[in-house]
Image (tube, rainbow, N blue to C red; front, side, top):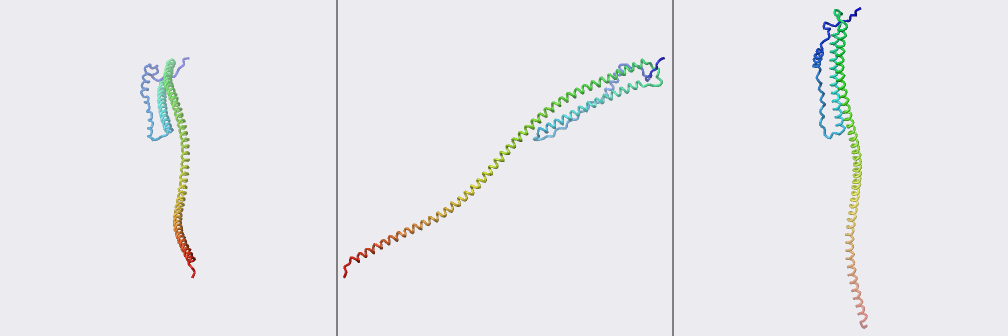
Length: 256
């Protein structure tokens, strides 16, 4: 008994080979253009910025670039998927069965299925090739970014070590300055004490000078008194000599 297979639409014969090529070209022209990678925001100018801020900015720019790249690849893959779905829908439309085409032979259906399978394999090969290249490019970009990140981490570690060393030196310098300030304060206090002692000594010298002046005046008085006493002694000796001479004269006079 002859087996009857469902038939295709009025255009059931196997299409010419140039037809899918023409359709593929038409579909390819509808492929969306490559989206523009979002421009990274320009870094704001800074003065005296630390190395950690520069590294964080570089990492942020790298993240924006990676996000744009993956977004573009995802858009491209979605476009390829839509094209494949459109081709499959077109092929399914060609394979739709109607009730009045049930007399088509199994050989034609088999040929049509083989052609459909060939087209699907072509689409799968194109999509797989694009995805494979995109994955390889992503791996290379990720490896490059990993190297850059490792270098940035190394630079950050070196910057942290340098900052720690500078902090240690700053602490040592601050301790030295504090010690010097303490010594200066002690020296100022000592100078103040010595100034007070010098003032006290000056006052003592002034008092001694006053006492010395009084002593000199007293010495002058004593000298004057001594001179007066000497004059009195001389006068007394003169009087005594005169009295002695007078007595001698009286004793030598003849008695009456």
